[in-house]
Length: 348
Image (cartoon, rainbow, N blue to C red):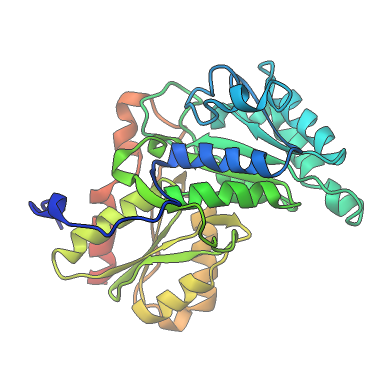
């Protein structure tokens, strides 16, 4: 299957005038505005991380927030992820709602002990007496041509930790609302952000800041289809949608589901879809072994066995450390790999 050509008339479509509450945003700008809104509504919301103040973060997601809210609410920290997470836990126990930024996903592991042993366990260990409303923002995934430890996908490790919730946005609307919902939650949440999509003009979309958002921990069907189901999250959603567009040009309609939350997994829409299409392909940048896609395969074959017309397939990163930047295009799931999986499942 080949990707369809862009319509020559696509730039001439007239759209009705947008209401004043609607802004056309990238994912990065939507996150910035979501953080700003949360800080305006609750003075207990505090941001902390490396270079997030004057610099605005290496990806400029917190740009302008220290200038507007001051150094007491947007804190530049030392280069110490263990200290960042530990400080956030202490702040949360004392009634604040701290939002940490881990500069790159590969730097999170000095704080892993704090996340696993304290953050994920305090609420349970105290029988609900102590709440730890900490959000840890994690830019993750490849596609930016970075050096080692700057392009990894460790989300499955954290989804396995009981007591911790894990979410990932894939579009500006979800970025704006999900970050606010995570901050308002009394549960500790890891918020994985697809860094290669932060400033993508192709994903720029209207965000209605006066709308009522969908629940945080719900999956969503974002394209309907009948031939097969594609399920993904975060950076893989764009690849799934591109594949669905390419397949549609050849008469094959694929359904696409965005998980949005990785723990707890809301697989009910996936089960419903598979019972109609009979085929499923799970897509993720993370390696396949012991992963989110592993769980999807197990649960779908458990719940939908008699509806399946073909084995569940996966298109993922490989079971190796992330490669040097010049090789990453061969490592990451792309349009051709997803379409090849579509052909395989339809030929079964």
